[in-house]
Image (tube, rainbow, N blue to C red):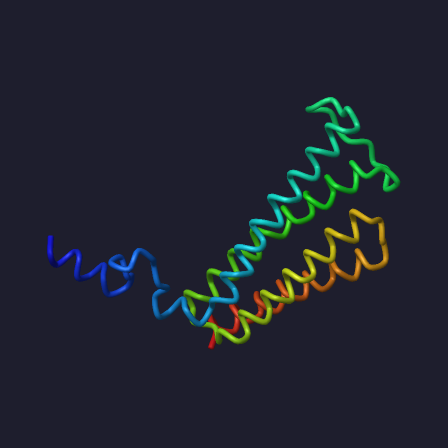
Length: 156
């Protein structure tokens, strides 16, 4: 029993009432902040889409009519688009940590991704089509760069 507490105490500080990040995760703290921000962003997108459905009296379970002039359509597309990219980003972020990709790269690529996602969401909501496409490209650049770093770590 005492040995278990000692082993746990080396990676966390349970006696001060908080957990500290282990040494290998600490350099990726910005990536962890981005992951947390991404979760909040997705939560907001679900709420916005749900409120838009309620306000438009949309019948649940029925498809949303494809019309970029309709806020409900834009809100559901913003949410769907984020859902389409989030798994790729999360896998790449975790692989960056496990494979010890240089933290500066992982953190920078994570920031590029989340800035692109936030821009994409806002541009979709406010129907700024050209900027929405640019924001999408920025988020994909973040993912592609992170994936490239992961591939580099595997082959080198």
